[in-house]
Length: 191
Image (cartoon, rainbow, N blue to C red; front, top):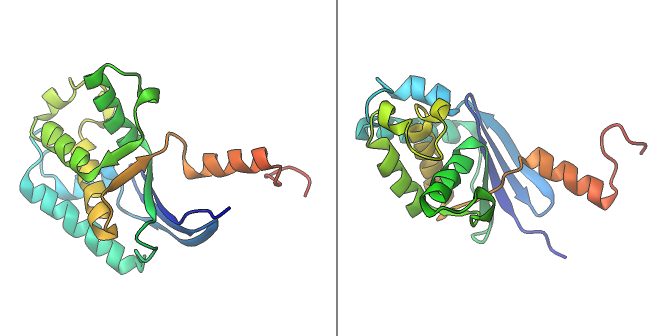
């Protein structure tokens, strides 16, 4: 059975892990200095205030520059999907879950570019104090959440993708689970 090509993006505080898989083969892997905390410090003058259009433009410019300089290529077939892991997408779904009254586990894992844009408008237009009161948005992420969303929106534009599939597991967890399920050798097991 054919395994689809896909991109995987895991956004943390200090870096953005970006991978491209051509079927089951890792085609590209880069760790970029585009973490939400790092970018917030670099592009937002005052995180206590609403997220400004100039900060968003600065995030987009930095993400675009770093991707171009990294040599990472968005060259997979058009049907390749983009998968996002990490706290930003979990938080985005948690906010939507809180709005709909559904448990997070029952939410569909697709977040479109329009969903992310609306969420950025909703959260970024608020000062930090009000952002911290949004159900589903952890207080500790409220300061960096707009920058994280702007980062994913820029990645979607660079990749030509209309959104991201969310995974509660990191890529490493998913691969480990698959190896154990399939009986493939895992770390520490006899080969």
